[in-house]
Length: 152
Image 1: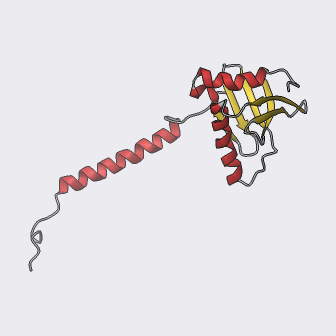
Image 2: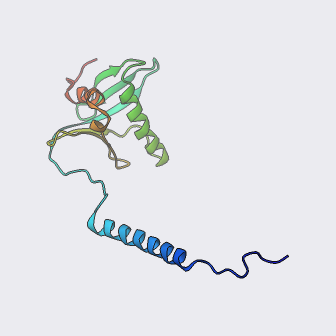
Image 3: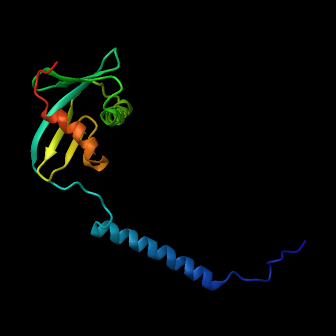
């Protein structure tokens, strides 16, 4: 059998167009890298208040919340409540399991001068900007930041 495309040449304009497209994409990527275009950075602000918290699962399905610095229990999240807190903690705990970090280390909850509220895992360097999930969800964590110490 003969090759049906044997006497035809590849279109030169298509080759030039593809080369120009690849070159443009590479130059745009380099320019973005050099000029910090499209990068996401957390703004630097002073911490207004912060609290180191430890969360402990209870046999009844609740979660006990401890203030590490005070060495006391702050509150207990009742079973089936505080779904956002539980979900955020599951994500952070998953990162700890992947890095073989135990559950005893504290998480740091911080209210920043620019209004942001974050929870950070210092052992894995993971941080969640809680405001990104809406004010109602952020308030559930903010209540832990302002909860009086020693509440049973």
